[in-house]
Length: 555
Image (cartoon, rainbow, N blue to C red):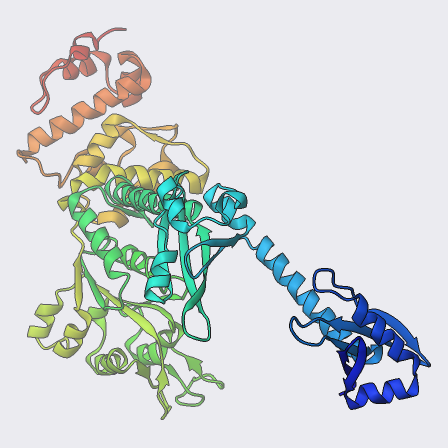
């Protein structure tokens, strides 16, 4: 060992180890230094090590007093101590780092000994509990619970159970603190310390409560919006005011969330395609393509190649590179088979395979192509009757009719007529840059009309009125004669004479309101003023004389 050791006996070096003997032999002056160090060192007044130069080297001499025994003197070369300088510096730096981490940790760190007495706390702990370290260090944790600062104190539980424990504490300032106590053990297995980490959860709990409240508000608002959209407004062009249409829209939006096949039925013009587009737009496939195939508009001899596509040279006139079919183009989107009742029986088999296997084979090809599509079908025909007549395959019908959606005609949902007319009028006005308005008498006649062409006829009539009416106001006289007369309207009395009288009176009143005076109205209608006044003054078969009719003969 490079450290020299000498046992001092009667004030002089006695026994010496080999290193000490070598060093004193090389430098006899060291013996006097050793004797001086032993004489001057006392237990009640210890001296630090003495640095001495010995030839080319340097060493430290230190004395160790042993009560009841001879003292020792150590001679340690400086080179020997130097090899520990780097390690000592690393340990010192590590110690300072841990002190800084302990002090700067945002979470609170609370350290107690094995009896529950507080040893140290950091700034995060002071911030969490709103007390200073001076108020905590040195005191038993049970005192803090007695003071009402912290409830509950978990250190005693950790010491008793010798296990990690987590709990939620409440402080005297009303804070909610999440704490975890971790036991540290000595070699015998006893708990020597407990480290308690604490985090203030007050703001987080408040944010969670605010988030729950915000979600509830969003759900309530979305529910109200859905109610308003289905009750008084239109969704994607679907006017849904009547209970029947609200039910259709509600079912369509619910079905849109799943992949079930939907069969949409109803008279021509009721809006089957609009409902199909609503299902597509409300579905997870809304970003994919929406492909409509009118099975009744494509010639039978071309229908197969149009639907399923064809390979190059598969038939006369086929494209050189082949062509994907409309079904293939709907990949990852929605396919609407409109007028499905017009599809030939021989193609119904291939369509059935597409629905069942989600694969198709192009005309002239041998390998099937996998497709990912949502299938909707629409028809104005009675497919069940066609199945009974063996003109439509029963297996295909059952595949298509998973979710049946029957749209009632417009005459069966009269609550939708006025909103639909107003919605269409706004759209047409915007399209043509116009600002036309319907006269109340004209609107009343439109409401009475039976609309055999359904929604499609509404669009036709409204667009015609906007284009052809001369002024901003669309009056009764601007309506087509069959619409103005209410032909087909659900009147209790269908007597021909009464129908004519009703139309005549409405036409006269509209002319007076349009022209301002009976004379101008008479000129507008090409009749004499007395005739106009007489007809207005005569009681109508369907309407009681109004107060205005008595003054209708004003000049």
